[in-house]
Length: 271
Length: 246
Image 1 (cartoon, rainbow over the protein chains, first blue to last red):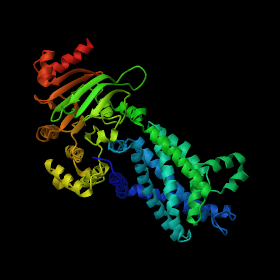
Image 2: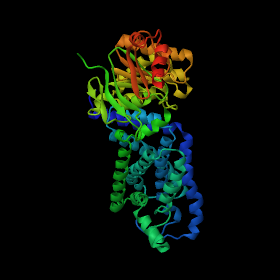
Image 3: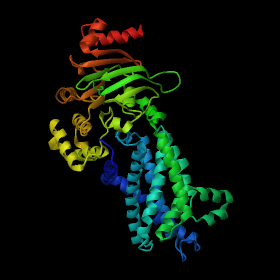
């Protein structure tokens, strides 16, 4: 079989289609992906509304409630968890078998890994729109056109966070280490970002915290989403998010390089 | 002379410093031949299997699939090979059809061709009426049949299977063993079948005995027995393994 553009397109369609089908079949996964950000929105943000006033800060043109501020951060959280979850399932070996199946197909490995990332991103975007729909009903509303302009931002941020998960999955060998990932990756990534508080609030808290928040790629992704949701392009945030995507994806492709033998070390335990 | 479906030459591989998982391994599988890769657990079968399927790569030695160098042209080489892994690789929540079409897409088959071949492959395994059931509802033997059908969708010249009968009961095992032998005979497919179970190997098969990462004997079962001075393959195998221990 010669490799043609049609072959690539069919393979990409197959990989994305499979991920979406699996997602549709796993209702628990969908529910838990929704419940987490909704709890933050309904409980945490509602409680914080009184304590935390948000001054006018771009892209917002008026005073906003804390719920409105936090919504893009929670969108980022959905994609962060989705990216980490796919890496968890690979560390768990649940996905390892199908990963092998994928990697022995006659396509370049970079393409297969990128297609897998796109598939995960597609699933995260379905979750995000479900969340945004509920938030809309709850009264957290962006301009209608914003729900269209946010889509490309979601693709970039979803790919970047998925690539981070894939990179981690190539580096982590045991499930026990995944608790460490939760503690040392997900929580700091989320809390040390602009998801919960704007950058200038962080600056009031301390210069070091401010610096960490500012360089955190997750902050960049959240700001990209936040602006896109209000039909604005945050070019620096886009640039940093794309840069992080390139670095993480490059690392993941290196991690899954057959000559490096990552899968070899995994396989060694089996025999 | 045409190139063998699979040829491995002077392949070595080590997981860490010092110990070799495979040392100077060479073997060939010709079209229409059922070649059993026989060795005890830990002999290096799975390592060799992972190298042949390019899950990882060795820097010493060469692997050719139908004459195509796996390291130089991995995608062309992989396109000629069907694989059944030791551990199950089907999506349990998807139907048999969805699983097969996913695989066909990875191999770039047009949807119509994929549909037709999926049905045909399942019919051959007596599984056609199960095509729209989710895999979770199938028993272990039927899942293996689906994996075998899947591995043949792109009509590979070479089929490699890593201990494909692990966890199956006796009738299911026999069905899979017989079916793969039929494929060799009727369709001229070259088969490399890794196993530690001697009763899966027929008298007309070829056998490659591997132990502690080295090839200990290779050839038709009769020749291997003659060279080992044994009546049965079981005796040959025990002698070949014991020689090492002594």
